[in-house]
Image (cartoon, rainbow, N blue to C red; front, side):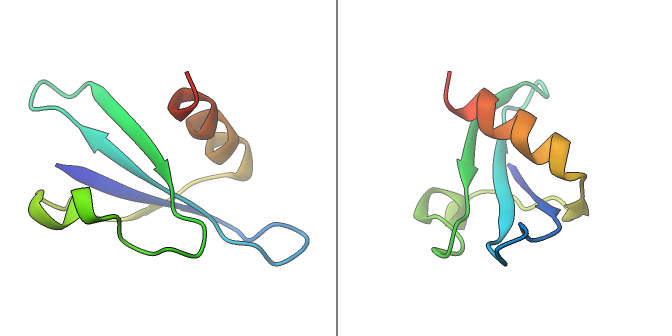
Amino acid sequence: MFQHLCAANSPNGNPQRVFVLIAANGSIVDVIDEGYRGLPDVCRRLIELPSIAISKSDYHNYIRIGNI
C-alpha cells in the first residue's frame, strides 16, 4: 500500500510531495519524491491510503528516509 503526503510548495513554487510505500506490518518500505512525475508506476498496483497534508519539515524528513 502507499500514501501520498503533501507539503506546501517551496518558495520557488516547486511541489513538495512524496509517496510512502508501506508494508503490511506498517513499516516504511520506500519513499519516492513526486517532483513533476506524478504517480510512480510501482504505486499503480498498490492499495492507496488517503492523502494527507504534512509540514515542510516533515517532507524533508521523509526525503531523508528515502535517501538512506
